Length: 168
Image (cartoon, rainbow, N blue to C red; front, side):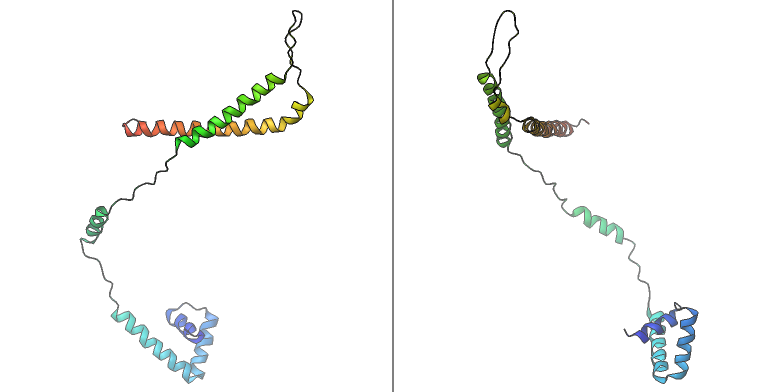
């Protein structure tokens, strides 16, 4: 669509401003080709307004569509399956790591049991540099996150069983 056609359509539909309307009217009086285009567009507008009938759907259209929708197979929810061996292996790894750290701590400690003193553990500087407080904190934070994830999956599993049994 050219700019002239667009201006004429706006003029025919009444969507132009007063300034544009005055410009188009002066162009219609001066330019014969522009006036011929205006006459052609007026004919098209009249044909469109006369021949266009609004089609209405049949009375049972909605019912037919709803029946067709009900016949469709409902999509199945995707279920992710978790291999419990992987979860147990990861949990076992962290449990083994915690136990090995405790065993190492007790094995390298030098307990001094006397009647006058409470047992003390002499940890060497080598062990303290190996397990920096930041490393221990990060390790415990990671274990807490994994514990929360496992607890969430356990509770969701119980909720799913309860919903299958009809409880809510």
